[in-house]
Image (cartoon, rainbow over all chains, first blue to last red; front, side, top):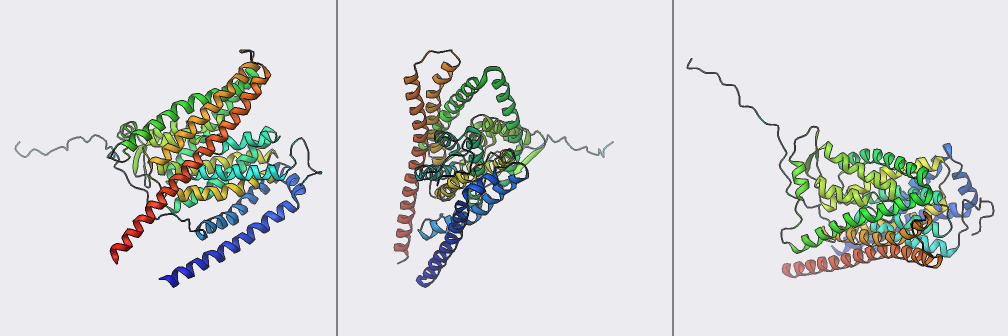
Length: 105
Length: 356
């Protein structure tokens, strides 16, 4: 059990370092050329795709890094499903009484 | 970090102080958003403007960070089984119409009473909506925490759910069935408020709780889906006008992506009621902050006579109160998380003793 926990911890640490390196590289790339990139991304029109694509890429790398970082620090969610509450029963349309065949005619 | 090549009227020079300030506000905003589904935006836009960023660039850059943050938060909470995707999408569709209506109202007020009139309208909407909704959310949280029966479905929601007005929609994760016609006004109001005060979630989450009947946990998680869809649409519009300052967006995003995950994790540690407590507290403090800004606009419209010194003091106190709202929210969240974590640890320890 302890060995398994150790392996898991090592995996999380490796993932944190990997995504941390990717995230740092991404930020370094943008901020090394901050002026031309900011100017290019603010040209409007079809250039609008550039900031949008950038934030998607950053949120993937940085999001994965942050998630691993909290796990590496031992802060993880308690696995539980959202509690279900009693709700009102689904309303049904008013039912008409069925037509009966009278046999005693 | 001085950018000589950039248009000084549109893009500010970045200093380490600016960067640190935006990163910290981004982190706290993300923490609150991950927990209650919205928040952060109301402080970030004025915070950027206080650094000298033009209003349009501040709004655009803030929105460009908001949708990826909401996406990451929604994904995280989806994994915990808290997101009702269908509810989020249905609400976002009607919220889009609400946003358009909100923009039209703003344009009308702007053309009639100018910028001061528009600012006064925004501040009064802030005060009225947040005081009313915030007080009710807070009262309800207090009432529920004192009752022993847990978190029941509110009366209004139960009543609306029992009305058969086709088309009826079943929301699987929220575990409820309600007519589409009752979700539309909630979504519309969310969009209307988002276009007016930039925080639609202050009506969206309470609306989903009290009118639709979803739990606080599911409402706040589904609000992140609405924030993602609306934020994405808004960003496309602003980016097409070339208003996004990618440097500001990435700095805030750096802080908020760390915060939003902590906020999402926090929801699994606390009782559902805590979401209402945090939301109600933030809403009431923000209402006070906006009320302090009202004399400035009344003065500009010549409806009130206030000297410059008093106005500048009021403006400063208003901004500080807004930051305080976010900070108080963050402290309550972290405090509740620590308490929940301690309780969980104690439960685990006692369980392991029983097995020995």
